Length: 150
Image (cartoon, rainbow, N blue to C red; front, side, top):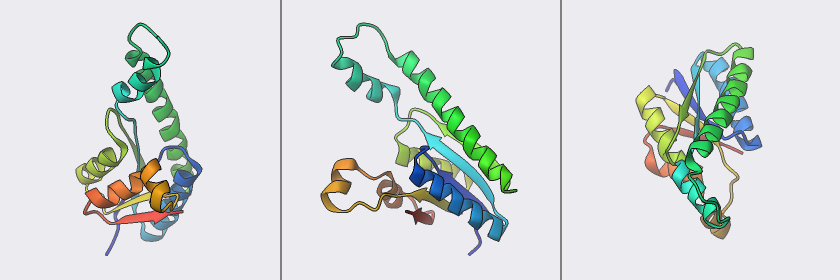
């Protein structure tokens, strides 16, 4: 199988950076294109929990959305520069208002990606259940091959 288009999911963590490094090596070896994707969860879900406990009166959502967009742009710019520096063709995609696994899977399908690369902590048992695992969710939702790095 050939991987002409590799989708790399990032959240800016060290694990995601390691996944990006692996995707770059693979893309250089296979002469593949890379797309880096980051996903922001729905602002209403993120903001409601925080502001409910603070007694804040007003609508925090516009400010939260703006902060998410800025963080995503900064994250994608950094990842894009890293991939370009390695001489690999790269694009970036920002998916807002989506749960991460869903956004990754939908983006891979839309772009016709041959491979999804993402990092995982490798937690098992209760730790995985309590913390959740976007990698596990992607594996459960996609038919696209997934390379999991640690």
